[in-house]
Length: 112
Image 1 (spheres, rainbow, N blue to C red):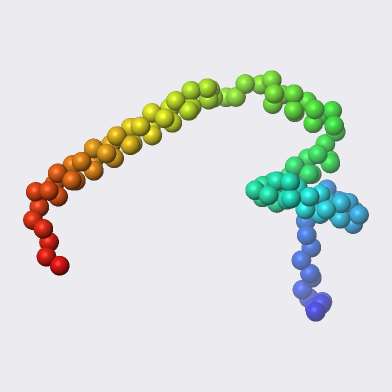
Image 2: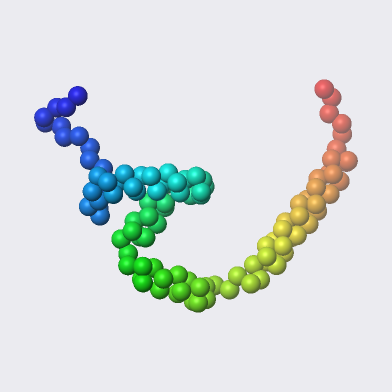
């Protein structure tokens, strides 16, 4: 129902896509959902808009930069660090359980 005083909500069209281009975008996003089901639609739309509205030469430059530029942080020893944390947690947990067992052995049995 249209009311003159209240205009209908218009979806944002930042890139001024035509109706045909919007239909193509919708179809592409649906295909991306099938290929990458865990990626939220918001991010899929960002990638689509980037690819459609950016010069292919710039996109290739971005890809090349990602491949060649080292990460800000060194992740080479990450798995070793995670294993240390896991082992420390596991040891602490076993020690705490041993202490609990010892304290329960000294306690009187509860009547039910």
